[in-house]
Length: 312
Image 1: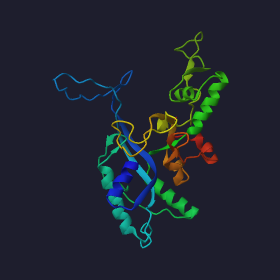
Image 2: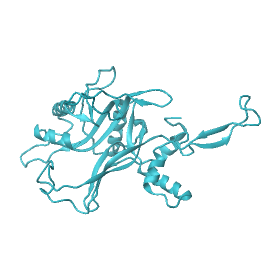
Image 3: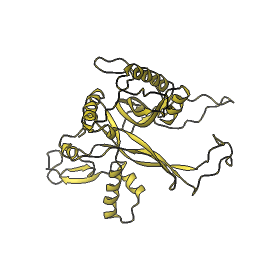
Image 4: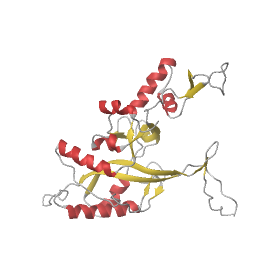
């Protein structure tokens, strides 16, 4: 989002990006199916001496996504007029076109952006709309917009799942850490469940046993581990100009490591507010924490809705 913001500034487009959301409509893993899935790897060019280049295994995937940005008009001079208004649809359409053209020249999650194919009854071209200030009008607009994002799944943050998993682990292992909870929640932990009625194949003397993850039952959702930002490794940033080969010699440098959390893919029709869809960047300079936070918060209605889950 920040790279896109810088490109818009160089083009003279007076827009400031605030938050971003993503909805995935389709995906194709670049793997070979089998008892164990294996990556479809690319053959790298040969080295300068003609020898075969080393192959680094990395997962790849084709995604069909929708990007949603919350933005505002950049700071205006005293003699300028507000252009980001509902009665100025021509300017909104022009900005949306330029923004879409700019995104098409960039990479999203390291992947190349390809043009979307036209589909009947769906808006596949970039568009921009003004979010009303009235809460009821906002809800009506969001209800109309989220129908355009179906079928699909939006990525929302679930830091609460990490906290609950840590509490669960510490009931058995008091010394469990947040890393243990994250690793435990990022995988399937199969355990022998209730004994099933004996069948003819199994026999009365060897009743069947159901193996499953007790914490990933029906309605538990499609949860995934995700990187959400960076944490500074040093107490204070290094002064500008002291680190060799830094990208910017005028900005202080920090050595960081990635911060991970949990997220969930959820259908847009289960979101109540536009803020539930969006991620915002936050900086805590004192702690040296630079991370994204999701505005998603589960409502009581969504808890009751688990009787009809997205995934079995």
